[in-house]
Image (cartoon, rainbow, N blue to C red; front, side, top):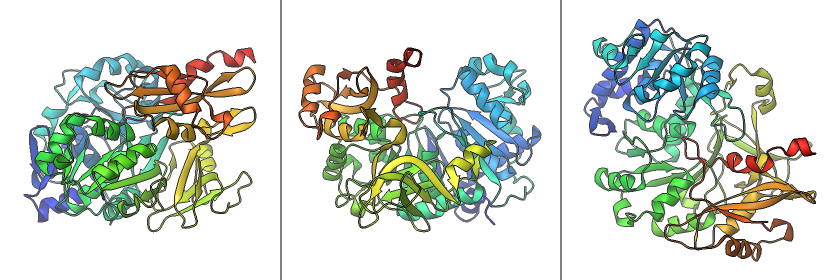
Length: 512
């Protein structure tokens, strides 16, 4: 039997007083958390939500969002977590695409929902629930849950092949796609990644990023499988994270590169406060080499890096190889494979760059209602990533860049990441993002956007010259440097390079 909501139920039965969840000032043991799951499962069933029907959420990090994941699983409903940053057609198109029959949100986001409600074909106002107090026509989530029984709902007959959730891509490169993951795939997250992170029932896992994104599941599922303690912050704050790690003796954290940089640059940073950490996992984008070196120097023996796609393929750089293979993103975990293929689809030898292709037990069922797109990405069980990389002689994967980010300058392929690694070494640079802009002669030319470290002072022209003196080839020289106070990001903390690049290309097509 593979049914995900059996995990908290198992610990509620056998380890009822072990701490399950810490959120704000609330500390719930497994018995109390499982009771909340049962109440919400009854709540959804009372609204008429049936097995396989979709329940959308439009919430920031809250205890209610976390319990909804497990409650939907308990009745066989499919949870569709949506970013609370969505508005207008971006929101209505995803709710309609998913065919959601219920939406759970909060009062502060109600104006966004009201604005698109007439466009929602599958959602009635009575099935819009507010976690912080509803009033007709909206449902009161807390009141309905409080009135529901704590006993388990009738068994839904969930199997491993049943759909657990639809994860819409973050939209950093285009129109979001609904990625379908089954109960079995999420169980593989629990089993294989818990072992990779060396988690135990005594582990204390802290997560401060948005749990509406797939990356959250790489620590969430193992934590609840093992019966560990899961601490959830409302949002990322470096100072708050450092304080929590010190106070709760946190053992495992997962961050995107921008958050790692904020942690290292925080005035509160002190390796002694973070001594309890056994894992610092970086994912979502490449972490610049100088920052890897800094982390491995200040907190040795803790750094892991994960490269992966929500579609279901990943590699892991283990902490034991973090220094020896520091430029790599690791190798596939057990039961997974990786290949590098050329334009003709043939496998390439070690050291030669091509498209990264992978397979394993995390592979999606497909894109929701997009069979053609599924067929293009998922071929004979292999995920075609659209990323460029190469394998070394030991089979470790090295990223070069994304196909879509590659710059074509006078017919020469320029990989932004090569330039970003150079720029990140400047002592004043906290973050850098390189992208191509139009050029009358070369078609495209690279420019660099940078965020300076707190208190740093550097001129754009100085940074441009510094970078251009150090790049390996003339075609890698940046035309200019743009200093920004911060990069645009999605709710997962990923840099939205497209939002920085697109204004330079606006109207370009009409001039060609």
